[in-house]
Amino acid sequence: MTAGTAVQTPIQRALGLQVEADSPLTEDDVERIANDVIQAAAAVGKTIEEYVVDYAKELDVQAPHTGMKSAFWSYGIPHPDLPTDKVLSSQFLAAIWSDMENDSRPGSARYLEGTPGGHALGLLHLWDPEVQEALHLDKTKGNALARQAWGALSENYAKATDGEAILFAGELAPWSVAYETELPQLRKTIGADNIHFMYDLSEQTLQGLPPESQQLLSESRVRSHVHFFAPDPESPPPQKYWESGYLDLDHLKSLSTPEAQRAAILEVCEQVTLLDQQQAEAEAEKAAERNPDLGAEQEATAPGLGEQQPAPVLDAEQTPTPPAAKSGPPAVASTHGVYLPGVEVNAKVAARPTPPLDAAPQTAPGMHFLPGVTVKPSSAPSVPATSVPTPPTPEQAQAAGMGE
Image 1: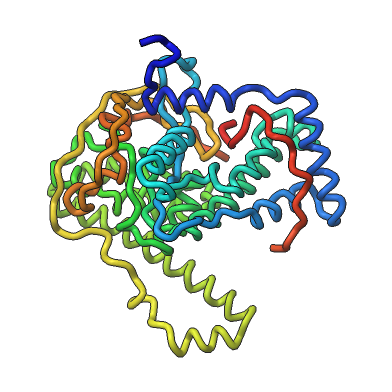
Image 2: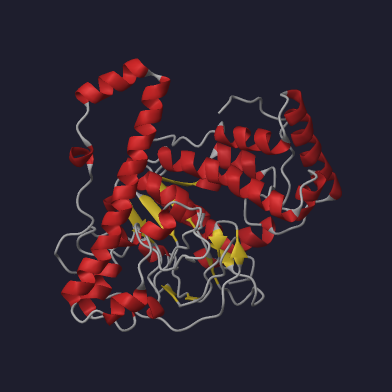
């Protein structure tokens, strides 16, 4: 078999997508993108920031079919063909997984950057430093705008998800779009039972816990609620879910019984559920203020929040302990928050049917897309609607997507 006919693994295909996306923009590309945005913003009397965010909010991220699996992503995994300070973005793994799912069953899966809206926003290359400079934005303002625009698009993508959500991530940083924006919306629209993680928890997270607590903490339904990054009491986080969802692992491991540990884990899940309910109430009040008649009708006919709650986060049934992993290198900054390097990969191409969630809650549909993937422990640095006309569409450049 020649090199030209060799069959690539999903990891190799994803790496190829990333290498292509990392190709630098030409000066003409940068100038055209910036001019399109500046002129479109001026035409509607908005600042660049206002225009871009409003533009992102109006983009199409609707699923073309009901019940589609929707991939979400955060962080990345190391790859031997990349420099030690670079990782393979989970964005491209999600893209290849989506392709493979659709090869087996057309129209069954999607990912954000593959939607019409994700493609359109990707053409603006908001994370590119040269584009930011051409838009007269410094790095801080440019990155803030990129995050805000992609966050708005991601929230609408989660709202438009009515099938299973497949999350390409390990431990989620609370400042990431996935944790702060996408997961709250997914818990509301499809429920925690329909959120599945593609990567296992790290050895550092599970080390020192009894099997019962390891099993519980590895449940996707728990992982969709909690995170392990302590807020700074001297600088309270602006993100609303940071404090509610924080699970102190040192405190958890100091508890003497599995029962006490279980109670501590579920308490954090309940705190997040309560915040979800408070957010839902606030949204309902805003909707009622905008449309008093609709608010009165909903109050008379809709069940109370207690009746609307999804199934409990967990049942008492226990599941096998996930495999452990080894320690890894420090983290580096990424689009969706912070990359989580230190993932051992032993990937094969074949995908298999998904077992029921109760039988194997730590796995996701298509998990055999990346068999043997375990996330190593790593540290993460802290981080500090109006309809708008579509701007002239920039030509497709090589560095598409939101990888940088």
